[in-house]
Length: 417
Image (cartoon, rainbow, N blue to C red; front, top):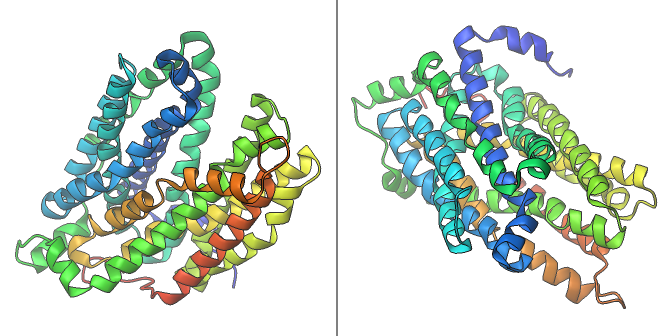
């Protein structure tokens, strides 16, 4: 069965639906852009505050650990008062904490600000996805889910560009000043984006009663636990293919920062292509089948990604591995929103996603120790290629297996479920 034409799907949307999707996509893109800024300037922060890299990475870890708090706070507000207000508040707050990070006078203050940023950032994905997908025709959800999720990869590319243009001339703090720019998106949402009709219809159906997360969990505890486990597996899949990859390129292949960054950019282009393709593909074959297909084919490209003998082939492997990793991820926004109980759709997708993310927050440390202890080399480094290959075979199989154990509700009516 042929895939739907993206242009035809875009024409299917009303002007309001297009504007709503653009707002959600930009919110997630700029959210990811702000998050990745830290990953580009870890070395600069360490030099500024005279710290080792193993200490500086806590600025990333605390952000990941605090994201579930934001998903709970802003998701609950979104179920109670509507999607627009909490989404705007989330964007304003994460922009403010990003700006404040640029003025941090100590590493302790910087970590506190990144924790607060994590809370604000944690609210954006779930609320933005709900607002966007609730406005979509059911037959277009899969494709636009894939595009929406790849705002994350687009944010990485944007951070790479800003790093190249800003950091060498203005220093690492200027990166965070630029990172405050998402606050301008609030003006667009405030003037152009209406409240979710599905949320308003749900509220009318419940006679004004708002969603209750505890009650929803009591009704379907297995669903919540399953979704967190699924998102933990997904996040290990992302981290397994990304966190050690620059180290693998620089230590094992001896690449300079420019070559390493170029391969990372190629990988993220692959991510955008894969997420868009499999998101649309899930509309045809189902959410679970699309995820499982992407994960299992991903196993086949691991040898090229981890053991390619030339830079050109490594680039092909980088593109392909992220095509399939993020291909599976492209189905996540629509899958979680369709699985969600209707009265807590503002909370359920973001909360389960961010709790899964928190479970995998220490994956970089786990992967590094695994590589050094299991595949040591005589010079004291590790054979990162072998370690990455083993990690990715395992996580691809786990993602496929956990996905197969679940259910799906492709095409469910968001207004009446």
